Structures are given as C-alpha cells and as structure tokens.
Length: 264
Image (cartoon, rainbow, N blue to C red; front, side, top):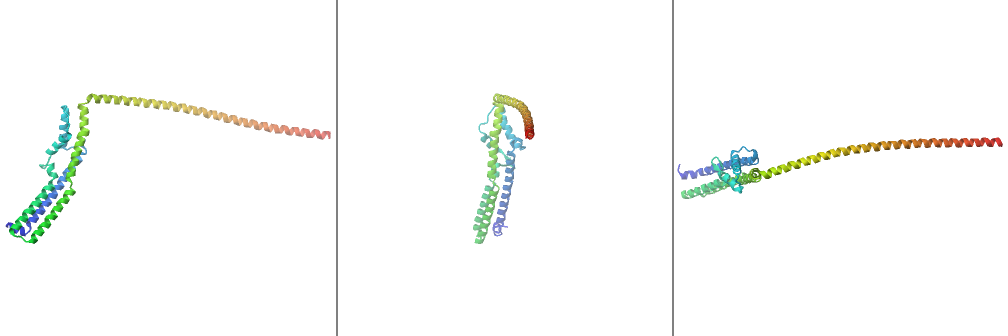
C-alpha cells in the first residue's frame, strides 16, 4: 500500500495515537522511578539503594584522606549526571514529555506536507488537525499530572541537604576536629555528672527538710492536744467552783431564814 492510501485511511493518525500512548507510559514509568528515589532519599542513613550508598562511600572516602568537599552541590550534580535507569539519564526521563510532544508535532507536520503533496481533501486536514490537537492535550495533561521536574528538584535538594548538613558535619568532626570533639565530650560528661550530683544532693536535702517539717508538725500537734486538755480541765474546775459558790449561797440564805424565824 502506497503512502497516499495510508493517508486516505488515516493510518498516520493511528501511528500518532500509538506515539502518544507510549509517551504517557514512559511518563508514568519516570514518575514511579523518581518517586522511589525520593522515598530512598528520605532515609539516606539506612537506604539500600546501591547508587546512593556508592555516592556516600565516595564522599566519606575524601574525608578519610583528609580532603574536604567544599562544593557539595557540584558533587551531587556530577553523580546525578552519571545516574542511569534502563540506559537513560535522569534528565532524559525528566524531559520525555517534551521529546514525544516534539515527535507528535513533527509527525503531524510531515503528514500534512505529504497530504498536500498528494492533494488530500480539506476534511482530511481538519480531522488530522483536531486529532493531533487532542493528542497534544493528552500529552500536556500527563506532563502536569506526572510532574517529574518537581520530583527531580526535590530529589536533588534532599541529597544536598543530607550530604551537606548531616554527613559533612559528622565527617568533619570525626576526621578534622577530633581533639575538639573529645574535649567537648569530656566537658559534656563532666557537666552531666555535676548535674547528677547536684540533683542527688538536692534530693537528699529535700528528704531531710521533709523529715524536719514532719517532726515539727508532730510536736505542734502534741502541743495543741495538751493545750486543749488544759482548757478542758480549766472549764471543769470553773464549773465546779460555780456550783460550790451557788450551794454555799443557798446554805447561807437558809441559815439566815432560820435565825429570823427563831427571833421572831
């Protein structure tokens, strides 16, 4: 079948649809790869990713040789440049949407050129243009949904953050500032021991203070009980004295009445 028949049967459009479907599939694969790398970069200290472990081993080897890595970004970018997945670099996986969009445009342009050469109808051009536009919209939607550009940026930032703020600080203290680190540890442990001794002394002092307070409270309680007993005795004595006084007054009155009766 010649090219004109292929164009008349719209077989070129099926080819473009196949290219678009393959582009979306590649975009989904690239998104899964970047998502896995992001997950590994969140746990760099315990990662099983061989590429990351090799990068960290190379970084540590510089410090073992007493060579400081001043530009961590360049170190990470160099390893990112050499990373390969299925034989393709990270930059290629990141930009697969652009490559296939260009391929769709090129295929559409070539088809229109051949259609003009073979004198195809205006209806063919309308159908081809609308289908090509729809395929480009699908490609653009996949580019927005599988945002591999953001994934790669986040992956790079996390690598640089761990290498510069965690790993480099630890290696510099381990290989370049050993004496200062030992001195700091000695001072830290001494301060910790002093703080523990002070806390123990305070606890002991607090225990003695509590015992003294309890003893004073017991003495005060005994004193209050004694005072209450004395007040009770005083009240009883006063009551008895009042009763005797009343009885004596009554006797005196009775005797006085008896004397009056005798003389009268």
